[in-house]
Amino acid sequence: MKYKLIFAILCMASGFFARAKPPLQNFDRGAFYAVMASGKMEEINNELLMVRATDFNDKEAYEGALLMRKAGLLKKPEEKLKAFKSGRIKLETALLDNNDNGEYRFLRLTIQEHAPRIVKYYKEQDKDREYIKQVFKNLSPVVQKAILDYSKTSKLLHAEDF
Image 1 (spheres, one colour):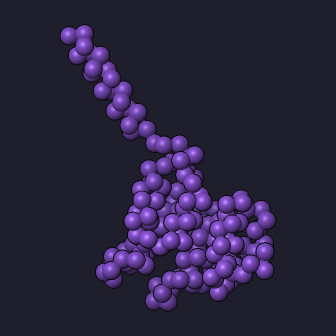
Image 2 (spheres, helix red, strand yellow):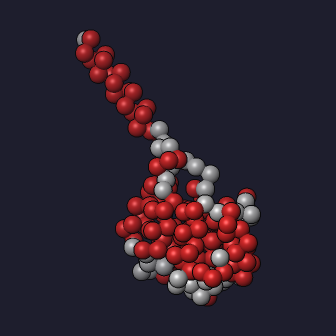
Image 3 (spheres, helix red, strand yellow):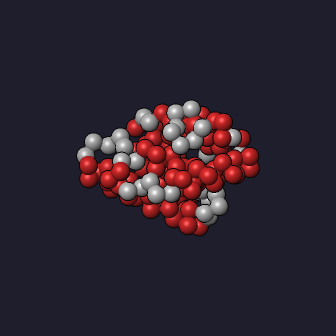
């Protein structure tokens, strides 16, 4: 009887801790940007799972960018459009809440630059590019590195801009 009670208590406690969300320090921005650059479906899916399981303020923006990146890798047009729209809503909602966030603007610019014209997601490119250039020095070193790495292949951002 005593062992059954201890076992029951341990099971309940482990169930409680299993539901707890991992802390913010589990999110690695550098790894996120590496996944965005890689364009590999499995890595994007894994990063999406990690972002969804973590509770932090920037979650919607990162999840939105990943969904839109993933949309470009999907095969069926209806799946592509559904993923892109879902990601767009998340990223744009994050931008509505914090339009002065240079990192969000960078995420949007990277998607806008590569999005097909048919989705009409390109209208803020010039504004985002100029804003990123203005706030570059105030961004975290990880984001600055991501921007500089991205600028090597971008038609909109160039390393000499920074």
